[in-house]
Amino acid sequence: MKKRISFIITYHNEPLPLLDECIQSVLNLPLAPEEREILLIDDGSAVPAPSFDSGVTVFRQENQGLSSARNKGVELAQGDYIQFLDADDFLLTDAYWQVLSLQSQYQPDMLMFGFTRAIPRKENKIKGVRHYSNGVEFLLTRNMRASAWGYLFRKSVLSDLRFHLGILHEDELFTPQLLLRAKNLMVADIQAYYYRIGAHSITHQADATHKRRRLRDTLFVIKELDALAKTYQGKEERALRRRVSQLSMDYIYNGWSLTHSFREILSCIRSLKELGLFPLPLKCYTLKYWLFAPTINSLCVFL
Image (tube, rainbow, N blue to C red):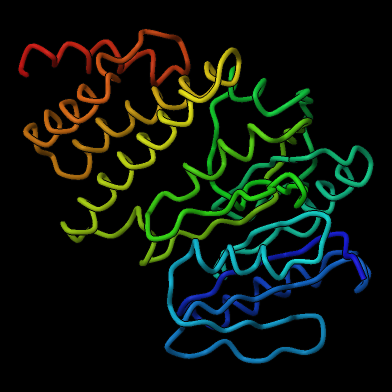
């Protein structure tokens, strides 16, 4: 029987109390059992995820990475809509219920919402809602947060789209493509997801090899989105070009923040120049972009 929401939780060696908290946050939602399914994808954990009471389906696979685990969840999902969660995070029940109320009322292809790293002390109500006729309109006018757990989306919008295997920053490649397919979109101004930065978060790993991989995989995403942009015309192409420019600036900026090496910055710039993506276009995409792009472009004198 078709479910309303499939909650796909990806698990790999997170502490079991945090996993319990994540699952309980879904069970606490005022959804009838027939309206939801909880899919727990154990991606080869050293200590396998335990079995749970009825209402949680556990699928165990050999360690293949986050993208593979999410793709398996999509394959198994029976819901009209999908919500991803990381096993060490959780939903803020009252806030997320308001998100579900919007989904039930308007039934958009995608419904984005905010996150927090601290439990709100005050009543957490929606401050505003923005409607977009499609995801392209959003990409053309708004700065995108790529995290796949930051939105609820209609499964049918996916078609053949899946997460790319074997890379970091897979959300940066997945989410823009999902937005291109969304025919209507809502953005709710509410913090409905609790994001916990763990020791194994990709942004917190200090290993030099890992840092180089982050930069390499960011460049891979840029190349893929740039190639995809060339297959479009009009608004879709402009929307992807905007995102590629933003990622290109982040790529150079992170080259410095991760390595503190001027040589690494120049290496990043050369890679982008070979793709025809440098100098960066001087556009007022975001305040950060507007402030840093001219400075970054001035570094061309060192090439």
